[in-house]
Image 1 (cartoon, rainbow, N blue to C red):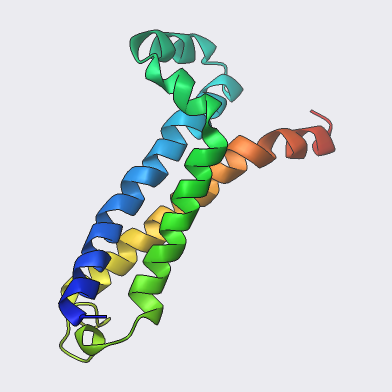
Image 2 (cartoon, one colour):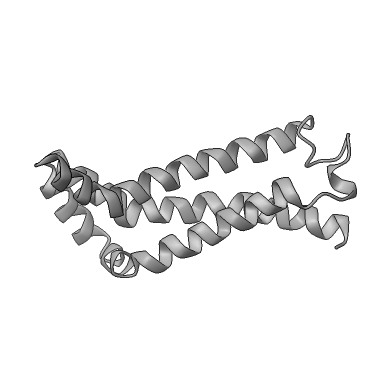
Length: 132
């Protein structure tokens, strides 16, 4: 693959992944967290203000799947794709400031995705196992 095209894909993925991960948090993790702390009226107000959140939450499996696939693609683009752009001095090389920034954004996105996944899919089974 052309080094310039690969670098462009890295930049696109680095921008798209946080947006997709924030979608998982807004649709699924945020309402669960707010209801858990007793702020159900905030969720009701949020849904009445932004009714599209209901349709997002109805398709949360697809949202999590798309976000996960984007995370995998971004991992490949950052760590496994090699090439001329990742040589020392290249933009995606870990010593380059943009390369470090892209990796920080990626790992922050992985952390947020994990938090959203745990809140959306594992919080109820964990609460049931603990007897709550």
